[in-house]
Structures are given as C-alpha cells and as structure tokens.
Length: 372
Image (cartoon, rainbow, N blue to C red):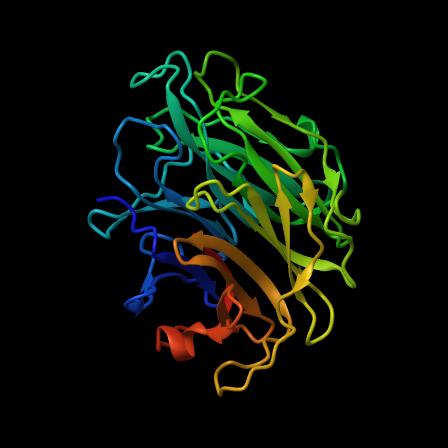
C-alpha cells in the first residue's frame, strides 16, 4: 500500500524517554498517539522520513515511515513503520548502521543511482535514506561533531553503511554543532557527483547560534569504492537576500528544512528557525528558490493574534520541524513549556496544541518532535 500523501506523520519524544507517533489527515483528523515499540525509554531526539520512491525509481518496495531515535546512553536506533500493516519493524542492527551516541538527529530520503554492483537494478534510479547525528562525546573535542550516513531506501540489504564526519569531509570545522536538519537536494533522480550514490542538503546551527548549509553524501561500503564522504564547504546563511535569508535577532536554538517534492514543479526549499529571543518573535520561515537562485527574507510565523482558547501565543520554541503533504506545509514545535504545537501554513492558520485540540490525549511533556 503506498503512503497516503495527504497524511502528516508526527513523531516525538517525551521527558520520560518514550517515543510517540501520530498521524493527521485533513478529513479524519488526528489519530491517537501510539508508543513506538522496541525503543529504549531514553529518547532525547527524533527524526523521520517517508520511505517512498522519489523520481524515476522503478523497483517496487514496501512504503512507510523511517524513524531515527537518539538515545541518552547508546547509539541511535532506526525503526520502520510499514504502511501496509501499520506495524513497526526494527531496529536496524548497529553493525549495519554504526552511528555513535548523540543528542540531535536528522533524516531525509533523497534520490540517486544504484551502484554498479547492486543486486536488484545496477545503475538504476534509487532513493536513499540520509541520516545524521551530532555526537555527545565525553571529551569536549568529541562533542558536537556531525556524523552522516546513507542507507538504501528499500532497506539495508545486509551491507554496512559508510559513516563519516561532515566537518572533516569538506564542510569545514565551525565548532560544536547544536542542531542539524536534512532535506532532499533535488526532486528527481539524477547522477550524483564524486562517486556518491545520493546527495542531500544539510543545514546546521552551532553553539554560537549561527546557521550554515552544505550539500553532500556518504558512500556505502560495497558500492564500487571504499566508504567515504564528500560535503561542500559550509555556507553562512546570515547574508541578506538574495544571497541568504539574513540574520536573526537572537541565537538560533533549532533548525528544520523541507522541500515540497509532492508539489509538481516546486523549486523551493523551506527553512524554519527557532530563535532564542522573546515571547513573540521566535519562529521564522525563509525560502530558497533553486530556479531563481535567491533567498527570501525571514518571515515571523508568530506575528498573529490568537483569539480562541486553545490557539494561544506559542511562546519560545526549543524544537521545531517542517514537512509537506498534499495539503501544504506543516510546522510542528515543542515549546519551553513542553507543549507540542502544530500549524498548517495558510493565511488563516495559527499554532494549536496537538494534545488539547488535536489528538485529545495527554501522553506527557514533549522534549523533541519531527514530522514527514
């Protein structure tokens, strides 16, 4: 069964370490929260991406949702929700996805090509799952490093994925990273550069509050070359439009990025930033148009009135996420009060508490969220 592209998947973790999943459909509303099974109750961050073909990928495979969960004292676990059965599969063995322990994770599916030794369709269009984790090393020099990897979107296939540090693989060392986000670089299959199977766009914010972007990927073992990586140098995003979206008043706490591949002909990538400022001005959106080659300026998503009881002024966000469905762009956020808020980006939209007027179910105090 193919993924319902009208549905919005939302995955979050609560302060007690549990990981939760819910879906929103424009006709039927929100489903009840379900706890993601087989994941230790020590989740600190979460990332998700739809497992589905992008562009011209032809071989059939089971569609669903990838979920990467960062754990407090062990490496991240990668789970999969089967859209045919609604059941959870995994976790992917650590020897297949050898990521280090970390405090921030990211995931996306991006197109590419199968390696020449692929047992299914060598050289054919293929979608890949890109993942990244910011390390939580004991030594200060080991903390804040961004480690990236890719997995074939149709499954691991028993072949270990290559992992590599982004900073030392071409992006450059800008200090300790605080948050990282990934998005598909192009909406259709293409031939990646540098011998990579696939490329993705990465945006990271660092402990000094500045945001930088890069593009690249990681070669998997057994792909016709040794595992490795190639990332373009980090590009600052503080330049004013059209070179960048411009600076923000305060330090950035979190960043999210998405590209509307479900919308034919859409050429923009959308970036959401959570600013560590006051109570009214801390969630911003900017767009980059690949065709025009220019950035828009930041737009304040909270510069609105909230007249109804549960459409309250959102306050300060600690975590944010953005994803596109056939309905449009959705923004999710976790506030400093541990509320999980949602907004569909329309002229008449406002942030609303998912537990109060969405799901109608209180599962605890949220600490992280992602959506797809």
